[in-house]
Image (tube, rainbow, N blue to C red):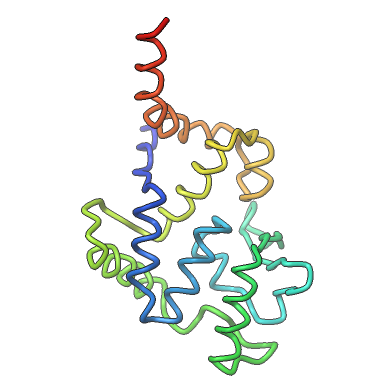
Length: 182
């Protein structure tokens, strides 16, 4: 049975979830990073302070490929670097400490639901929605599937074709207007 196309959240919805979590340093930092790096929850879970190179703006994550953990670089924006530095300092984390293991996977999924309700989002939201948003945003910016796959750790470019429907629905209104004027 084919996989169902993901329910994509738009920028305003993603931002409203992040803003709703501002009272929780852990969630605010994690959700903001998820928006700008598009990594899977498990990839954040294994990040230690020593895995972050603030000067190069890179965070090393582990992904599972063919039953082996492989290191992948997640690129960090200047805002993400600043936010991570603040969080690590505030939490008094040492080089060997995990950055995002303060809460379990299940608790993080529950927190996502809590903050999406607080933000007034009626869609079924999970942590993976940040990844879907990130990839959809890159598709809308005309990134090639090859580049997106390399950046996000996808092994199959075919998987990324699921995001075409989100982009197609976004351009529908523009297309209708343009086609009416032809």
